[in-house]
Image (cartoon, rainbow, N blue to C red; front, side, top):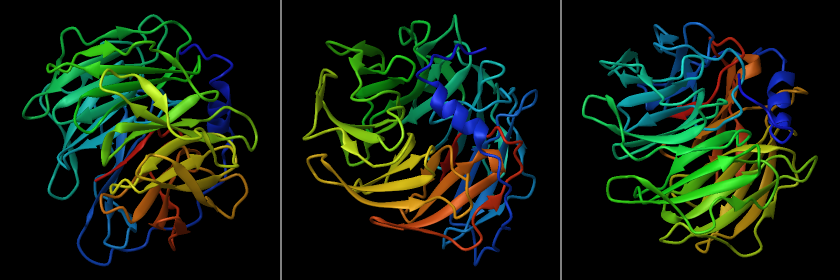
Length: 382
């Protein structure tokens, strides 16, 4: 089992505390699917993936046959991580099986249904995987379990098979509790968040995708509990990190320039306050203009505008629900940038929100009931 430091407890406690029921029902699609949304159900024993069709207006409808068998075993308890499930090129879903130390790779069918690729699930080459990064055939996984905590890489071969990348494994100390691993857009940088020790790992990648630590890495974070993070989609040299564990009303987001050798330098007056509690998860719009931080502690979505320099300006704070105690535990955005989706694991639902810059509005019919067991971990949209 994972060794939890006192720094990672707040987000875990928040995951366990949400218990309000979902009362809304899914809205019918107004036409063919524009894409799909998937949840890692993280179910103990036999893990499953819940799938939804995404309508043109953003509304979700459960897919026939959902939930789909992942192949490995979930943990059966909330994962304190971002990126527990990812979609790749609209063709594959990658999901952690934290209970069996594996990664499932499933092909997305023409109707959104999922089928395992040959050889799946694959060993995560560590213990208790909780986060995946995937881009242009390169895959990295964060393993957080005691005695096998690391970042480790794979090639994704044609057909979806994962092949371990020699020389890619970076061992992590006990108590690091990595909560997110991520690649930048051109596969030249790798970053990882040590939630337990409030540090940020930064690497530059050679032409084979192997990591080399930046001078001074790991860096002290600009707040407690660096958690959800993302490279800017339109600038692979800008990195944004949520500081989740500063305390009530003290959440913030840090902005960094990531130099060619992986050195991180603070942008402007970073970190930028969001006036909320526990911004554990974040997503950036595909056009790179807006960042949305999900504050699990206070139950609000913070919207920031991102200047070309990477400076953040807080635009709004929008409640996740009018029902007390309902919050979210991960966030995804549709490829067109018009809809946010929240994993509401403890209420077995998916929140749907239209976004227009700094304006965030809950859709009618949200949240949509899911088939999970209250332990879902991660959400991905294609």
